[in-house]
Amino acid sequence: PRPLLMDCDTGIDDAIALLYLCLTPGVDLRAVTTVAGNTSAEQAAVNTLQVLETAGRTDVPVAAGAATTLRGDTNEEATFVHGEGGLGGVRLPAPTAALDPRHAAELIVDTARAAGGDLEILATAPLTNLALALRAEPRLPQLVRHVTVMGGAVHHPGNISPVAEANIGHDPEAAALVLAAGWDLTVVPLDVTMRENLTEAHRLRLLAHGTPVSRLAGEILDFYFAFHEESALPFRGSACHDPLAAGIAVGEVTPKLAPRLPVTVDTADGAARGALVADTRGIHRGYPELPGANAVVVLETDGTFPELLVERLCRPGE
Ligand code: BDR
Ligand code: CA
Image (cartoon, rainbow, N blue to C red; front, side, top):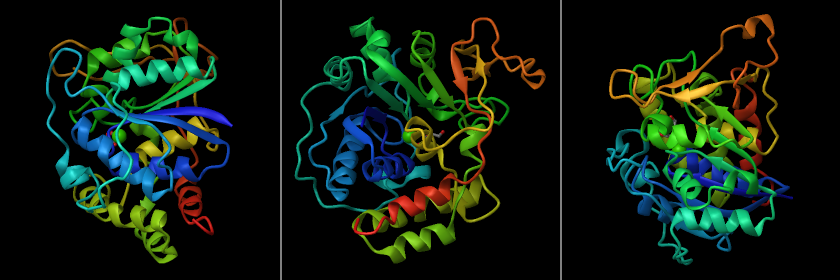
């Protein structure tokens, strides 16, 4: 089993990614940490406990982390994308498990140390907690086997500005730090997550399957679909941001195009603040690696992940 920590801002698609990880054999979910993004860090932590409880995983430690960005800004919550409370307005019973008293950054460092170099991290939210963990333990990159980040837009437009995607753009300083930290890193940008689409047929299958996990997924997707239909997709359905990153992190998705590239973040105040800057010059000529490459950037997948995801969430007996 692969020890994994997920840092997220639970959020509809974060919740689906969590459910997917809980139902995927071979994934050893060691901890979940939360940060302000789709909703507050505290609300995201409560949502996480509720989602994990739905999947029968009250044993996983959950800690809340940064409420503001590294430079102290407070971002607006994305209620218009994820609904009141972050889970599409769906109300769940109060969780029976308590939050871990540690700060998310502390739980990240402790979990990495305990895993003896084997821990993999999946980050599907602004990267503030990871940046704080790096500050607290500068040797963290040596203690972690791999980091997968859902974030950025390379050739695709941004989603919080013409060029910035939410997870990178809501804390550009943190993202810059995390990208430059020197660990083994994979970045999953909008270029691929916007093209792996869940549809109403998927959602109806989830609801019809009728288990607590599949029903929760189907119910929270209703709000997400309405948002996407209004603003981002020409049909009723959704992107598959965080679940796709999870699929890539655990090795169930093999990208079709994923070059190693030099990747930075624009942290200047201006029109491009928060943009992921990936140097894709020359990749069409098959350059295996550009000098200064620091991340594998997933630029193409085959579009079949949503089917696998729905099948997994409808696993018999779950
Ligand atoms: C990212 O932003 C959040 O709204 C989603 O949960 C995802 O992590 C997509 O830009
Ligand atoms: Ca997220």
